[in-house]
Length: 205
Image (cartoon, rainbow, N blue to C red; front, side):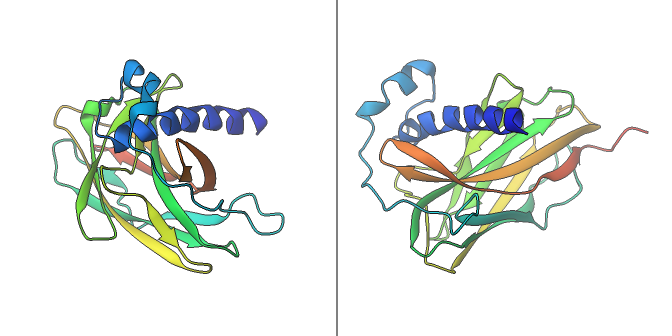
């Protein structure tokens, strides 16, 4: 359990390093991440504090997703539900979608995801491939400063996903969402969903 949490923290840490760069619209290359200090400043927000002995301040789950996606097919939708269990307001919250496929064959160019921001605009999600074989996508965009949840409040994020034509079929994928609060040029892990499992193409018998 400790190793799993440590590895996830490393993966999310990589994504968080890219947050200032992605918000600035620059490519998420190693050089760009290294120069993230030149990205636009984001105001500091109060920390999202988990209540009592809870691990996370935000309850996070994925709902309504299909069991399979056809390579080259149309977009199919699901929702990310976040609930603020803390006593204070939680602002600057960015979901991070992590995809881990059984064959470690998926690549960012094959994954097409977009989300609907609070203003109703559809925003594309760019993915990065990590060392452990995961594809990580941060829900961010220029001018979008994350979701804000009042105490006891919820946010329902509409997501659409498809996989490019030619993506290997019969591949099982484990998707999970981590809620991260951006604080200045850094961020804190404030929620995690249970896994959402699906197949790209028809499952092989």
